[in-house]
Length: 284
Ligand code: GUN
Image (cartoon, rainbow, N blue to C red; front, side):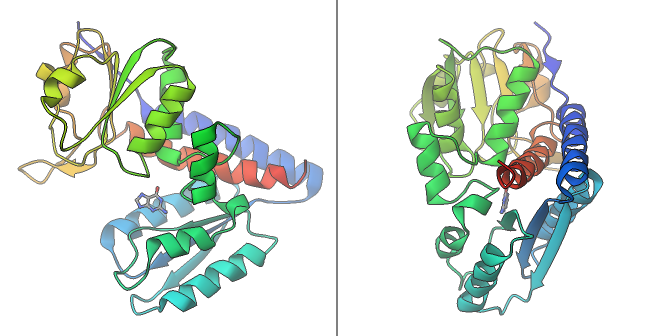
């Protein structure tokens, strides 16, 4: 089998265009524009690129971005106070604090200070709990984007074997729960899993989010499986690549997501989706 690539860039563009229409409707009907606060602490180069892309995507969709850049030396209390003031600000619908934060600041304290109503990243323990028990709430953007990609190829999870490699709170765990919600039979594999290739070969759907360049080869893939690559790694020549060796997997899978241009653009599209739904929530 020669796999098809799932074009995340094109799908994300479509979702972003849909959000632009919704934002324009909100403005026409209620004279209101959604606002997303984006907080960046310090000078982490990767975070600066991510934040720039998020702000640009907001602006293109007509969402106001409220950018807050703070120095590396910012105290935890000052950051918590900024989050509290954004919680109180009625023109702010979503709050995103870019991670990682400097070592002297607790990620957990900051995330848990964000009002659950404005938790567009879906990282708050309230959002995580809602996902766990199947109640509506903000879903983390990367797994939500992957769910959209699966819908776009007509992949019905019900009764399928899904293997999620990676158990992070941002991708692996919420992804597994979202696939369970869609009636897949889900396995979470991780660095201590014995015979990872054999576990992965069970999968009709294989989602890989471990941050190890080109880990997954054809040997990990069942004939006809759908392979989703969440990695953003560098290969031995410093070139951007994913956790999946795409070339090797293409001969066995039915669908593969490319890196770049696969899952990455979907994450931003879902951030806009969550921000627009936070704003729509205001108008019942
Ligand atoms: N750092 C890496 N990915 C993300 C993300 O999706 N949201 C936030 N807030 N920080 C990140």
